[in-house]
Image 1 (cartoon, rainbow, N blue to C red):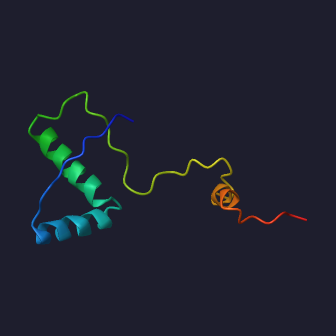
Image 2 (cartoon, rainbow, N blue to C red):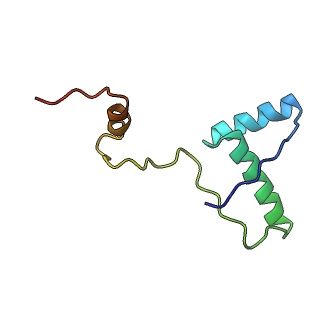
Length: 86
């Protein structure tokens, strides 16, 4: 994934709350919702650069665990929480 630019954005609290609620309804973070809306506005205005990277789909990213049958196993092993099997 390409490097992301950080931007400080000041919003009216009511606007932020509305964005956060909308984002939650669509399983996005507030940041991802803002980017989605900005990209939509740019595309509608014909100003979205053709070289702009794609956004990932809404929702939680797929786990990259090696043991897909037990995705928490790697984390448990690192934390020393797994018991030796008899």
